[in-house]
Length: 460
Image (cartoon, rainbow, N blue to C red):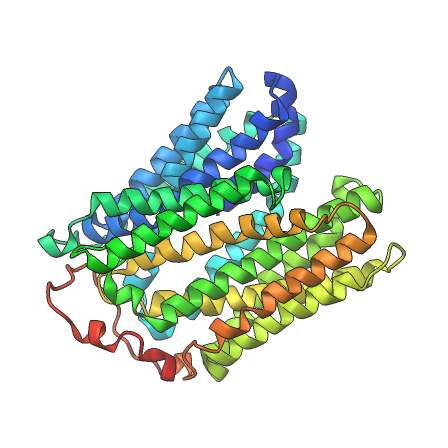
């Protein structure tokens, strides 16, 4: 909630920040891009560190650092200071995000993960929905610095609660040694990719910097794959890389989050620039999306128990595509009810996919690797929105009503791509899975039953 709230309130505070610090538009954009690049580049590495040193330690350090960086931003006299501290905030945000999922895996058996994951999804939806409202109040009353000050007491409270969590610190062995070269290469791949995608709205897909950035990311990724296959201590363990449910869930989360956030980006321009609504009125139009995410998460748990991950994910993906197609058919004079209904369908589908894919990822995490799997999941949902916004901007979403409709149909097609990985998820009922809860223990040096079984879960 802390990270989701911080991201949404910043959007409201950026215009005030720009005026107060005399910043350029490019500098203001870097207050978001710097954070995004840092957090996306380090999530998997942070999860790996948590598997080795303990997730409670990473969560404690991460949340305290996040709060300290927030306080520093609130006191920053220049926009350059804000940019640097936002990047630092991203580093600490990367430390705490995989730890939250890993601790769920360590606390609950896999057949009982649905409810806590649904609560987590609903809490994130509440934070994301309340962020613009809270940010507006704080900025109006006390200025943009207040949106960062509010993080400090929340971070201290979470840090205090973290001290009450008792999880055994794993022993360190050679099998858990972190490959620093591989880690640096992974961070470089993700940083270059996210930075390139974040620049697409300004430079376009055909811009020289975009083409060069994508080529560089592809080349670095090829080097990373080669090194991971040959290395004895890969940053993404072989047991994780070979897991079909984990890989399919990552792909599903990537395309569905891209579809949702690309649609929100396009809808913002549509509602404000084409229909002439102010920010508050636009927020009311989108409110059914948040409401259906909150209400849809517990419903998704019930569906997951009755129908299993595969059918539930396929249904959620179809709902996302249906909501996007429905929004593309609306005109300037469409009733508020029709707009709200389609946003509600979109939100229900997204919540269903999030609960199902997250539960599958965390539940199927090989023993001892809950942190790196959580980092992979968070990486997917951080890169997805950047990709979606790049797709929306690249199709000219703000140019005209017809361009907006075309953008939504393109994003619906992206969402339908999620049917492929959704079909690879386990077909058995979630309640029938009796995997024991993972413990913070050191993965054995040799092959384990989990290692040999990875990749076979897709047949269930």
